Amino acid sequence: MFSSLSIAVVLSTVLSSVLCTPLSDQVAALRLDPTQVDRINTLSPDTQYTFDFFHPTAGIVQGVAGHTVAADTATFPAVVGNGVGMTVGFLGPCAINSPHTHPRATEINFSVNGTLRTGMLAENGARFVVNELPPGSMTVFPQGAIHFEMNTGCEVAMFVAAFNAEDPGVLQVAQRFFGLPVDIVQATLGGLGVVEVEGLADMIPDNVVAGTDECLARCGLTRPVQPNLQQQPRVSGNAFPTGTVASAPPASSPVKSAKGSKSTTGSPAHASHHA
Image (cartoon, rainbow, N blue to C red; front, side, top):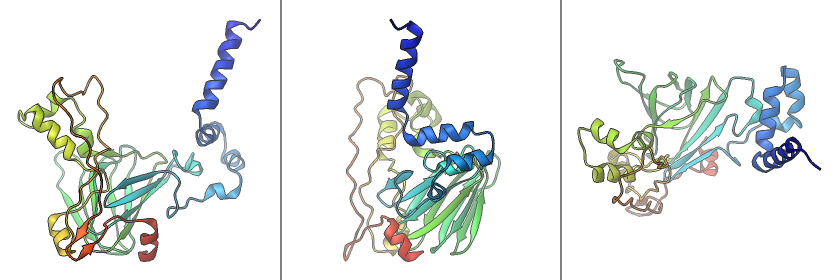
């Protein structure tokens, strides 16, 4: 007969094998390795030390206007114990990597092939910092600062964001703010009604987002319908009051130009062509 302890151990082992992916198992093993030599031995074969941003299998955040690809502990185990991470952005014409923060890392952002408009708010009392980054230039976003990058051109632009943390984290400002309890959002916005709060929340598009009216007009584009699946999940603590009905997320569609169809989505293939 099995003891209760034996049964518990067996069940735990079975559940672990079901719930843990090979990647998470590898990351867990690397965290237990006492030295860099041990981590190198764990990461085998040598290709474990490479990450392909043009053909990623994980770490992709996709919006109608472009996408980003992250190499961090969740997608690239080789960074474990090394204190670094990286994200590469592929921004379609006029696309914006919408305002966000990295709670655990400072970022160095390098513009590869296009001109980026960047902005940053570091904290209360700090002035707003805005810059244009032509190809070959970079800027710094301090840890926790709200910041954004916008492609001001009419071709796909790529940026490289390097972090001093292997798990920098990311917090998209608009989605998370409207994911707070409704009464808190209402009060913060001066007593805005529940329906208005819900309506605004449903309007926030998935990152990467279509850009400013000026840029879209200059590039001969119109604003597309954008999905909004990246909203904060609703639980009891931040649920809308009973009786309000959330609107269904709109389907995505490419940006249309006045002269025909033209997509703003920055794909790896496009980015490699322009890089």
